[in-house]
Image (cartoon, rainbow, N blue to C red; front, side, top):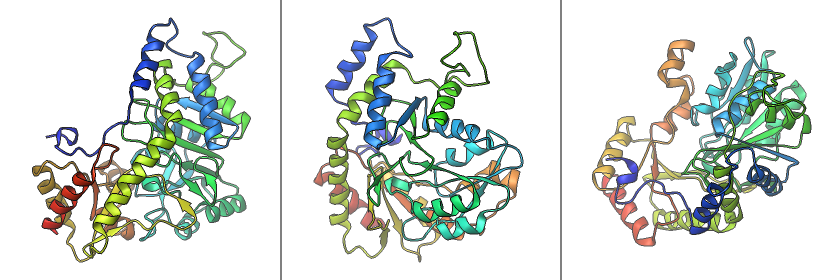
Length: 374
């Protein structure tokens, strides 16, 4: 049974009739790509994030890839990121022939540890990609200070953190550029899609060229000043995204409500640990993840996942360590023990059902079934 077929599914997109009507309206026009909805979506998104430019594209992965290319990372260069993330946070570096270098995470916030980042910087470091894990913006100020001192770029992977804030600044507005993803389980969705945010107009101009097969605003359709990609986002997706963005306050409030239901229901549960939210962060809830206590053997988590699924409850192991994915092991020789904080965390995390349709009764059932297995 898939996660979406579960009685209580892991995730559900939050789509209203307004989004459906907006998409149908686009389908009644002759313009399905590179039209007015793209410009409107980008302008609205830039305003929301407090930046000068937003560049829509086909996915968060595409956004990361374009940025790694735009900053000139390539063979012989290194890009530092966290091993506790979705694999795209490191794959984007491999696409350009550079080497991902991992820095371990903090055991409390689960975000990349600035001290580990500082220890990982070398003369070959071209960029740092902190990830806002599960919607908590990373501790960026010390990373930005380090990057300025060492002359490297910082790309904020905010694919999970739209609407979050760090010391009053919106996610995606803090580093040289930010990246968002719009997969159906994210805070807002365009089906598939992504966005780059930046206040650097030259970078934005280059990214718009890269996403559109290397074209620029001076030449025609068959003029390609540089190599690029088909990373465009359709008018249909942009229409969906525009309505989702208009509803972002409502959507985030619904997600906070479910997170608070879990917090209250699991309060005092000593067999589980939850992510510590820094006091200088406004959390934007992407998923709700709990961690088994340290004395659980690593294999016990997978047994619990299987048992929950058998009971009709969607769940997952967010995240598997990137450095232990088979092709990273084969290519770079990583092994268990290289990033012990990440590994201990990843061995014990359980993502519980998290979406706007969950009721207090649903949360009580999920937690009750989980507690029987602890």
